Length: 73
Length: 403
Image (cartoon, rainbow over all chains, first blue to last red; front, top):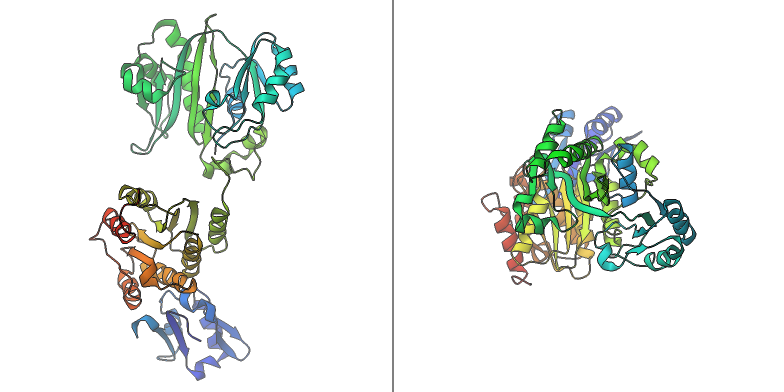
C-alpha cells in the first residue's frame, strides 16, 4: 500500500535479490527498505518520510527502483 | 529556571555577598528556632517562585520567636500568583538607611549582559526609570572578555553615588556580575541591596534565574542547593496539552516540534524557524488573533513529528483552524512540513483546505512543498508575503480581530 505522498516501486528481479536488498536497506536514510532472506520488503509506514534523495534509485540497476510522488499525479 | 530566594542567597553566600542572619523554616517550630538564633525582630518571607509576596500578605514581621509559629501558619497556605509556598525564610529585620537596586540580565537586542543599577531600590525599577532616569544606569559588558570592577564602579557612580558608599558597593555589584557569568544566569538581581543604619551593606532580597539549557553544566551547584533533576521551576506546572507536546518531540529524534505552550484562543499555531515562533505569535496577537498555543518547529522535523504536532493542536478544544508559518527555512524542508501538516489534518478527520488558514513556509524545497499544498487546495504564500502579513491573513480567515 502506498503512502499518502510517496510510493516506491521495486522491480521483481531486484526485490528478490538479497544482496541488493541489503544495499537498499543501507542507503535509505528513512528506513523505507527492510532486507530479509528472500529479498526486500517496503516498510509502508515510512514511505511518507522519503526525502527524495534518490540513493535507492542510484543503488539499483537503471529503472528498477522508482520513487513516485503521488501528489504530482 | 528560577531559584527560590533562599537558594539565590545560598549562591550569593558562596561568593561572600553580605547577607543578614537567617534560615529556612519548613515547620512552625523551625520558624521559632531560627528566630531564636537570630535574636531580635525578624521578617518571615514565603518562599515562592513569584513576585508580589508583600501584596499577597506572604511577608510578615515579628518582634521575636514567640510570634513566629502563628505567622508561619498564616504564610504557608497563601498562594502568590498561583504559586504555593515551599517554605518560609526567617531573617533578621534590619534597620535600613537606603535601598539600592542591582540587576544583571541579558539584553537580547545587544546580545550582551547588561548591568542595571539604581540608588532608588526597593520599588518598581520601571517606575524609577520613568520618573527619575538620572537615578538608573544601564551598562553593557562582555560575556567573553574579562570584566573588571571598574565597570561596576562607573555604573554605580553614574547614578550619583560617591565616596565611601561607592567603594563599598563596587565589590558587591562586581561579584554579582561574576555570578551572572559563571553560572549561565539569565537574571541575577538584588532588590533591595540595603545600606543599614550602622553603615553595613547587605542583600535584603535576591532573585536568580538560570538558563534551563545550562543545567547540565551546573549539576554540582544544583545538587548543593537541593534542586531536583525533575524540577522544572517554571512559573506554572505544564498542562496535559503541553506534556503531550513534549512527548511528540521526544519520541522522534529528528528535528524539533515541541516547546508547546497552551493558550486559550481558537487559532492553532504551527510556527518556528530562527525566532519565527515568537515573531509570529506576536504578529497574530497584533492582528487581534487569539492563539490557541505557542510552539517551535525547526531543524527539519520528520513528517511523523509534524503530523503528530498538527494532530495534537487540532485536538485541542476550541481550535477552529491552524496557521502554519515559519521564517525562511534552510535546513528544515518545506515539503516535509507540508506533508506532515496535511497528513495531520487528514488523520484528524479534517480537510486541509478548510482547516489550514495559511501556510507560509518559504525556503528549502518550497516548490515541492507548494505542489503538495496545491494538490490539497491549501492557501499558501512564499517569502514575498512577510510573516506579519501572513499572520494577518490567518487572523482574517478567523473572522478578523477577536479582542
